[in-house]
Each structure stands twice: as structure tokens, then as C-alpha cells.
Image (cartoon, rainbow, N blue to C red; front, top):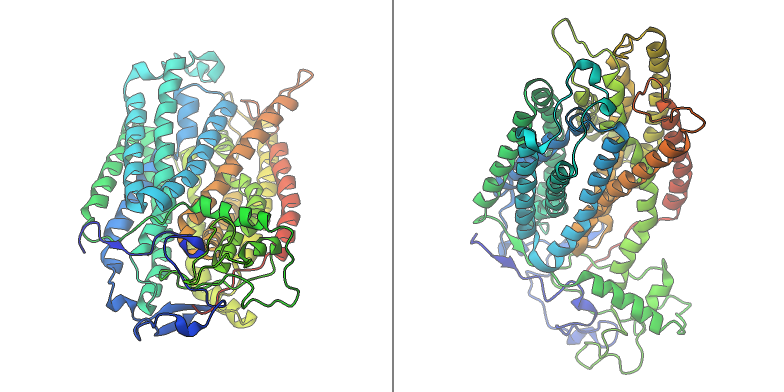
Length: 612
């Protein structure tokens, strides 16, 4: 397919409300006046309550799996580069920049949150202005620039603090600290990575889905396989990063350990552009947020109107035929009922040709229901933020625990502290096929639901595992601290194998399986079709909120608990601090949050669709 081949999706995402095209109102005049559709367009296939045009691919072909080597290859290289650069970053900041562990944890939490918040901006830019491909390309170049800077910092001694003179000076406070210029260079590099993340992550999955014709059975099967391959490659990538790349950074050279991901990022960009003659590029569809504002303003202007009590729709609500790109029509619902007033037809608001006279006073039922989708998701989103805090500990304080435990595996090998999360990744890799092939069919047969457990049920189990993770982590830390204070050597390492952290890592893996996979699926299915980039970014916004909240909790605990001459819970020497109390605090917050989530999930109603 030629470069720049655009699928004609209509004038804009919201044009079915009152826009450039002039749809006819189905309920306002006779349906016989509608233009006759071709017999090809009328052949529909229903699946999961959604009707699809069954033979549209005969007219508009899409590359499908032909484009996947380039898209999945680019995504694989990009994640190898990004995760490889940051997998062991906590250790790098403490060892090479001589940072306190709280300062290092805050930098990583704030950077992670900024990266995830940037995805909502990237999604907005992609859906409204640049399109997904250009946004991914610009994000890739930004990531490459950030990686080059961080690699130079590790390579050039002038850009980082000098090493500590003796082994006795390994405590950060006894070494020469970083300068403002060195910290500024580090933050510039991390900013480049954050911008790149904002452009790549919200668009990668939707751009891959764009290459499949979801109006055909084969295309829908392809999208399901794409999700599976996406999760599978991500797990394999993380395994490589947590073993090989972290080992190179820990035992060979930081500059080489950062240089390899930088070269991989360059390869990812080359691979992305190699497939430009194959890709289908879906045009950006207009200003999404202005359309959302139209619904709220129209509903406010008609706030004094009364809605019909009998549920009648025909002749009362504005219900034109949807855009040709819309595969499913959303029926009028009673949820957020006050927004239904935006679709009430007032005198002289509809022209004879079916278009509306005042765009900011009348919106279609389709548009009103599309706005309801993200609004209904907000309570679920807020309830998932706290459950993600336990996952935020994986790259920070769990690493600090591992550094004070026996990491020897045989006489000649020591497990890198940053590689411990490989246990979580192995858990994910084993659980996903087990659930998909064995548990899900069994649950589906028992529950008489095709999907087995619903997405909200799986998210609920993820919340439970997040609580168990922190409880087990606190219990293990209590035991580690007792052994360290009683039997530790001069280096403060407890005579306790680092593999005692395996149970909490296994629970962490199960938490990620249920929360991460279910949330991405939930957001993609419950958001309107043309807002899926924003839906995908909402998952990263969940991680961002968790990172900022975790940083806030860390700072409060750090400042409040260290009084009356006592060390705070999160002091640099964890043998003196009380990291176990911190873990129990997070578990308590997660338990309260679980009650809130159950309430929100009970109130939530899944998106309904009906034939176009």
C-alpha cells in the first residue's frame, strides 16, 4: 500500500453531532428518505453484541500481519532500549551519583509519573493533529536524544560525581555529591525519555490494531493475536533487561550497559520507517475535547427541560445515522441521565436535511453516549491508582532490601539487585498461557460467560494481590531486619538469602497480570472506538498517579517518622529504619482502597451496543 494512504473516516470524530456532514435524523422523519446503501455495505456480522461490515475489506484492504514484523519489531526494540536503560537506575543513582535512597526514589517516581502523564498529551496530539505514526516517530527521536545524553553522562567523568575514594565511604553522605550542572544534565536526559514515552506508548497498540480490518472475522482474530504477541514480547524483553542488561551494567560497565539500549533505540527507528510503504495511516479525526464540551454545554443550556418518563426516544431525541466509520451504535442509557438533555430536540433545532442548526445546543445520542464512556470510567480509574503503589516499590525499596541480603548464587556468581524482578516476569510468563488455555475456558463454562471472569473481576483480584504483596513484603523485611541487627557483618548484609524476596515477587507478578492486562483491555473496550489512544493512555495515567502518590507517601513518612532523635522509617540504612512499617502502611491503604473499588465496580455498567 502506498505511503500516506489514508482511510476516509469522515470529517471528524464528533461530526455526527452537528458538523460538516449533514446526517438525516432517523427518528425525526421517515427512514425511507435515507439514501439507499449498497448491498455490500448491508452485509453485517454480529459478534459480542457489535455489528460489523462483513465485506468492507473487499473495497479497503489492510496489511494485517504483513505490517506486524515492523510494528512489533519497532515496539520490541523500543522497549528493550527504554526498560534496559531504566531497569537498574535506582542502583545507578545511589552508586554513581551518591544519592540518598529517598532522593533517588523520588526522582524515579516523579520521572515515571511525568512519563506516564505525557501519554495523555501524546494521545491527544495523535488523535487530533499528527496521527499515530508521526507521533510514534517524533517520540522515538525524543527517546533516542534522551538515551544519548544519559549514555554520555555514564561515559564522560565530567558529567557525573567522582567515585568514592575508599570502600568505607560507600555511604552517600561521605562521598562528593553531584553538582547542579550534573543533576541538570541527568534531568534533561530523563525529560527526553519522558517525551518519547508520551509519544510512543499511547499509540503503539492502536496503530497496530489499525493495520487489521476489524470488520472481518480474520481481522478480529488478528487483533486478538496482536494483543497476545504484545504481552508476550513485553515479558521476554523485561526478562532480557533484568538479566543480561542489568548484569552488564552491574559487572562490566555502566556506559556499555546504557550504550546498548541506545543503539537498540536507533534500530527501532530504522525498523519503524522500513515499513512505511505497508502501513495504513488512519487520519486524525478532529478535536475530541471540544466535542466533549459540546455535550456538557448543551446539557447545561437545557437543564430546565424535563426528560420523558416513559423512555420514549423516537421524535424526542436527536438520533441521526452514525458515521460510516462507526461499527457499533450506542443506545441511549439512563446512566448520567442529565447528559441526555443534550440530545433533546427543541423547536427549529433540526434542518429539513437532518443537520442541526445550533451545534452547541443539540448533540446526537451517539455523541452523548460516547462522552458518558470516559466519565463513567473515572471512579474505576481512581480506585486503581492506590493498588499500583505496590508495583512502584519494585524498582526502589525492594532493590534496597536486596542490597542488604545474601545475593550469592554459588561460589562465583552474585545476583544483581536490580534483576530480582525477573521472578515477577517468570510468574507473568507462566500465568498468562495457563489462564488463557486452561483456567479461562473452565471459568467460562462454569459462569456461562464467553470471557470467563469480567475485566472488573480480574482487576478486583489484582487489588487483592497488591495487598498480599505488601503484607508478605513487610513480614519478610521484619525477619531480615532482625537478622541484620543481630548477625550482620560490617557491610550490614543480613545472613539471609535474597530468595526470601521471591514470595512477594511472585505475588507482584500476579498483581501485574490481573491489574495490567485487565486494565488495558477494560480501557480499550469501554472507550469509544475513536478515542482508543486516549483510552490506552489512561492506563499509563494510572501508573503516573500511583508514582506521584507513592512519592507523596514516601516524603510524608520520611519527614514525620524521624523525630525525637529517632531515625525515620526510610533512612538510608534500612537496618536502622523500619521499612516493614512502610510496607504495612501501603497494605492498609490498599485494603481501604479495595472497599472503594468494590463499590465503584458494583455501580459500573458496561458499555452497550446495538446494530448500526
